[in-house]
Length: 223
Image (tube, rainbow, N blue to C red; front, side, top):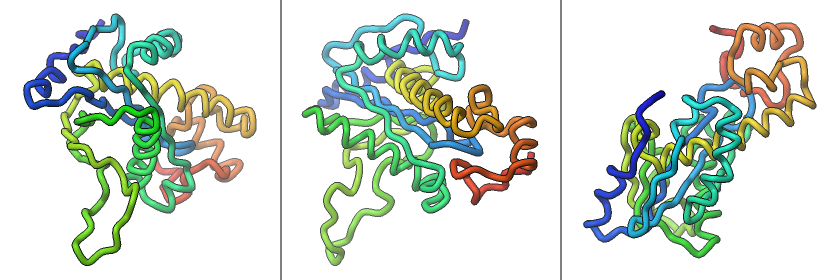
């Protein structure tokens, strides 16, 4: 069993005046089909408590993720998952689609009346904040995206409980979506591969051509 993530890193933001921290993680970035999904789990830095068994979603069995999903939702102050479709990935590129999905989750969080003071994002690149800050000469853009400070941390999903929790939420929702899409296009085996590029999935694309849920801007047949 992997080392359990803690809230030790999150606690660093408490002396800086932050109260609500949003842990953020994505799933589905490398898939050939289906959406990219971004989970957000908000914790209250003044009332933090650990949650047993939560790990980065990639380290958990599907049955464990399903069991933990309602526990994570109850544990979080608020939480949300946003998605960007395969078509949006084709149109915006993967970074633009991640931003779109992440900000859909972000505005769902804001809609609850909770505004996170800081964001902890898995990885080394901040894809959540607006792509460019408007200058004085630009028109004012409302709801441009997450305007809270974003801190990135490589492997945050392995060591930070808020981010691991977000990864569980995103993975469970995306897997359920792929199960539903499998009923529409069973030839691609999305109930098993969840849209990722397995040999059987690529062979099905060769045989049938891409579906409307494939990311056609990607090289779908290249290993």
